[in-house]
Amino acid sequence: MKILTIESSCDETAAAVVDGERNVLGAALASQIKVHQRYGGVVPEIASRAHMEAILPVIADALRQADATLEELSAIAVVNEPGLAGSLLVGLAAAKALCVAANKPLIAINHLQAHVYACRVAYDDDIFPCVGLIASGGHSSLYRCSGPLDFELLGSTIDDAAGEAFDKVAAMLGLPYPGGPSIQRAAENGDPKAYAFPRPLLNDKDRLQFSFSGLKTAARYKLVGTGKKDFHEAEISERERADIAASFQEAVVDCLVGKAVQALKTCGMKTLCVGGGVAANARFREKALEAATKRRFRLYIAPPALCTDNAVMGAIAIERYKAGLFADLDLDVAAGLQRDKQ
Image 1 (tube, rainbow, N blue to C red):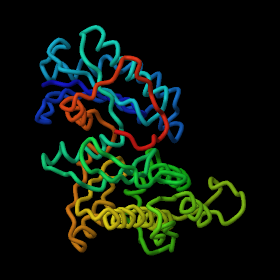
Image 2: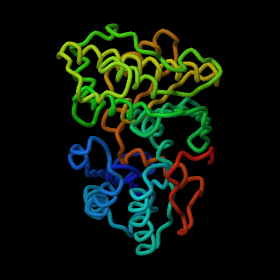
Image 3: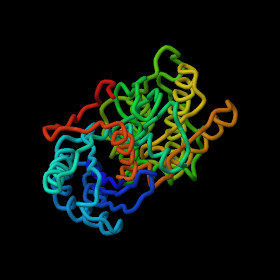
């Protein structure tokens, strides 16, 4: 079995070729970070255009690395939900065209489920059943994962995603995009206890949801006080910047780890699998490991290279191929976070 997987849900154009044993035969990626840095975040229309330029060269590169032709493929898989509509459409159109040209079946991939499956690929271990935590720029979600084809949404953010909050607070602090790595670097010289930022919903035992908008606002108030003052007017020392970064990062991490532990208790499970760009944060990985050691649950966090958007995690298509779950060529994109579905 050889499956070509395509990822274009946001601002990374990626393709990979995997076999039936989850071996990565080839993988290519074109990043748009430099394109969006000047805007301080992803601009959907610009992202779509960049995908159109990169999609075919990236696919060709992945096939070249795998020493594979379209005719040798068993199927072509593509992320069709969730993500930016325009970005998803570019990947889906390319996948459909290749399926028609090579007479291959089409497999639909859920981007968030694939983030969890990245742990299966990275550790070559049976991770299911588990609780899946996805923490990224667009999503902060918890899933009950009874199997690779059985995901049940437990809860998600009610406002900002964790990565989005990192980006916005980084901008307030005058740090470059993307915000997660910038805040992590600044926090290395700061005191995580310098400011008592709130941990929204952390102690709410009835809801497996996240909220980062209030935490983001608390950081803004620490910079410029209440009211509508522009945070660009804030004058802070490097020490203050580091302390705010460290205290903010600590609050986000506490919320993510705390709710994940709560989800494990709710589901009666002993395995936590984590993916998404925020999962690459060193402080998050440290505190998640501390929680796993203390509470004695198995912890799998995707390696940093598989935390950010990539096509290798599209190996979840193997499971759908084996189950005979193929998509019709009238498959559409579903940009928003979707209800539970197989």
